Amino acid sequence: MAAVDLHVHSTASDGRYAPEELVRLARDRHVTTMALTDHDTVDGVREALAAGERLGVRVIPGVELSTDVEDAEVHILGYHIDTSLAVFCETLRGLREGRLRRARRILVRLAKLGIEIPMSYVLSLGREGFVGRSQIFRAMVNLGYARAERRRGDFEKYLGKQGLAYVEHYGLTPGEAVRLVLSAGGVPVLAHPGRAAGDALLSELVEAGLAGIEAYYPAHGPELTRRWVEAARRCGLIVTGGSDFHGLAPDEAAVLGGVFVPESVVSELDRRWRELASDEGKKAGLSKTL
Image (cartoon, rainbow, N blue to C red):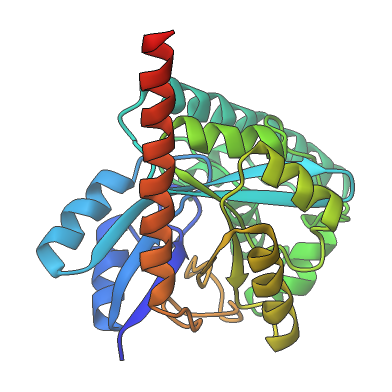
């Protein structure tokens, strides 16, 4: 049966598989459309697009931007990103530099807890200088400070939002992340809203230009999925979904293609992308006549 997965991570950020390997895995699991949505980087998109052409899998260029609000993290997915835009890529570069500073601070906090992990070792687990909490956790597992099969418990204890070594993100607000995606010609979508995204935040993001909500997600049961589908319809937003596949831990919530996402989601995403592009074109035409 054909499948859709619009939330997948590669070694360009904190996933286990290289972009081409992910596309091959998608094909083997009968995923016909996937989006590569690495954290704060589009470095793997070109490789994934080329692999998709060869292997018959449609790849949508994407990104996942991380932001903080009070006691929760808010992630914004961007689809149909124009990865050639220099200003956009420069902004992502700044966000990745912020990740490095954050990782160093996390490692200092871990060291105070008796968990000594060299930054050089954490960086060796990623690609091209990218670092995230998943890599730090992998280092903890490899060095015997945590257990992979207890990812949720050990990860949350040390690196979760309320964790002993947690450090907040440097960079964008949720609204700024939405606008950044729009500036790159993309479709901004609220990732895995769970129970953290309230009406006030949703209204703020819609005002900023949010176009969709990721309602189909491994941690969303039927009730939460229904809640976010209804919220999307109420706000005039599209619905997306995906596995958030990293391929790192035995207890990962879903395999690639493992979350039911209606095929109609892809056509709705494409339609919204064309609408946004048309709106920008009209604005550009209007500005030339003024």
